[in-house]
Length: 99
Image: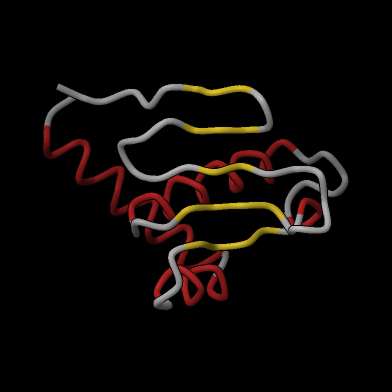
């Protein structure tokens, strides 16, 4: 993928998140290092497009240099930062870096 294609995809991601999740965008712009998501904020009824939106939200937060975590009262927690491993419970998913 060319740099131009990557920039186009990033632009599309930012536009989609700004349109679909304006409060999330505000949270990512805040001074805090972490953004908290409630488990049922996405795909409460198991909708496929909501799963995709959740992934886009996590990617957007990483682009903003934020960690993403679940509500402290819930057992679900996802932590990740741009260019680092994604942690979910006891699993660790290494980040994939483009050359």
